[in-house]
Amino acid sequence: MSLRIARCPGCAAVLPAVGGMLPRFWPWGKKRQKCPNCGRQVPLSDGRIMGDSFSYWAGQLQSQLGASCRELPVLTKARALAALQPGLAADHVRLVPGLESLKHYVAQLCRQALCDQAHGREATVQVVSLTNPEHEASVGILARSSVESGEKEREALVARIGQNRFIIYTPSPPTGRVSVALHAQRGLPADHGSTSIATPA
Image (cartoon, rainbow, N blue to C red; front, side):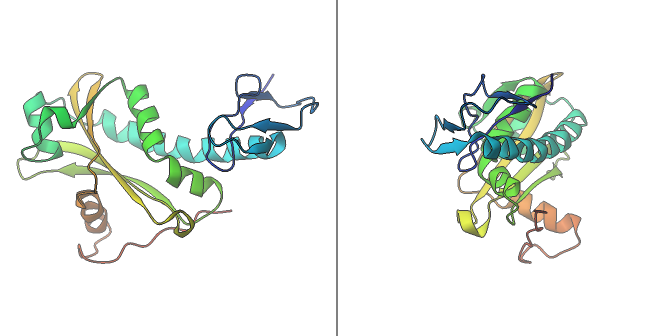
């Protein structure tokens, strides 16, 4: 039996219908489910569509992030901190034990932008490889929500400190380092305004 995750179209929280998993041929006896996060009464058919769309965009992000992080060299913790930001203190980062845990955590950080993409709004979530002047490598993630969601930015920087151990730094407000790297990748000047890619409906 094919199972699909149902999510709230408003906040993308998993709906608690059969543990959040819906069979492909659901006996629609209960037409609506209350979202445990925002309290919205969601038609289960809408929840299933939102679940499919959100899973697609989250999967795209996690695939790119996984590929980039597998290429990262293993650094000492001191060098990893320097790769994320010079002078960064250890208590400003989060230790993440495992690539799957890292992908899940980053998807949560980018939740609003992913929700917007699932609705077909103009929002972006981008992953880019970074190096500092000492050639210490890290991975940057930049999520921009849609105009409807306030065009908010979330930035995260990841370095590797073990075979399957990572540290992640989520500066607030964003440092702009990831945005600069993305512009450089496209051959644009650092002060060039970013252009959101329209998400297909």
